[in-house]
Image (cartoon, rainbow, N blue to C red; front, side, top):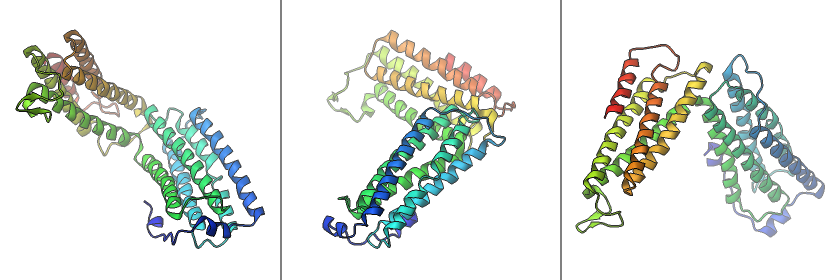
Amino acid sequence: MSSDFQNFSIGPERTKTQRKNHSMPDPTCEAIKSLHVSSVELLESSKGLIQNPTPSTPSISSSASLDAISVLVGLLHSHTVRTALTCGPMASSSSATLSCLKQFHEPILPLVSEFQAISSRAYPEYFTKTVQQRLLSLFDTMVQFLQEIVEIVCGDSNAESQERLHCSALMIQECDRIQKLCKEGPVMLLRSKLEETEEMLKDALDELGEVIDPATSENYDDDGWNGGPGDYTPEQTQFATRTQRKLRLLSMLYKAISKRRITAKTAYVNSMAQGLDSIDGCLKKLAALVDDLVSGVSMAEEPMTLELSLVQLVDEAKMLSGAVRLPLDGVGDGQVDWFVMWSKKIAES
């Protein structure tokens, strides 16, 4: 949470009657309510534009719009802090809150414009969709935050100071997420997804280990399985062992990608967009295929169904290996042969 709120004393809570005694004059209250209606309309229309963007011509510097989004979100972060403080128990005047609420309008349309700029194929689709989701979440949170602020200032709210602080914190959290996303860019986002996929693969390998050796399962005791499908046949155990070998190879591939292709030092350029999207697509499909296959093995599904799932997994893994065979900048290096040999090995194992 922002240090602004860590150091902010919310003071004693006020009862509803006490808050009504601090209500502002009606003209100011009506002005704030009217401004709130305009704000909600602006946010809803802006959400529509973000959900259905009209890509603009890519700028010379693809990072310019991303930097601009971060700056504009930073303004909303600052406006949130100032607005929440004007609604505290020591609020100086209602006009200060009115002024703060007016400032929330300023960054909205520029944010939409800059998002449309990054939707022009300058960045991978998975990245622009993530930015899109975060902006939509920010706008939804802003609607709730402004509604609560207006009710509190006009003396119509039952929300106490702690609840108001919580709502402000949600706004700041959304702003921080977007700024972090803009700062790290598409390569680090994909790297994070790769790390998550690796963790899921570790869990899948553990689950297969329980099929191969039931004594390692938490559901196993001296009497056998508790709640499991029962004893596995030798054929089912053999298939689980074969699947485990292929998943271990897949784990090796993920580690190689993290170490040699999508590293913490990889700098993004526009020419990487298509390749990164291909890698992202493969990772998503592999995560689903691994989950389905391991679940099928655990539940002792039909052998032919499991064999087909394994073939699909191997094919998708080879597609991922092909997508990362060359470095993201397209220039060959000494690691190309490793990925070629890996594809052969997983097919033969």
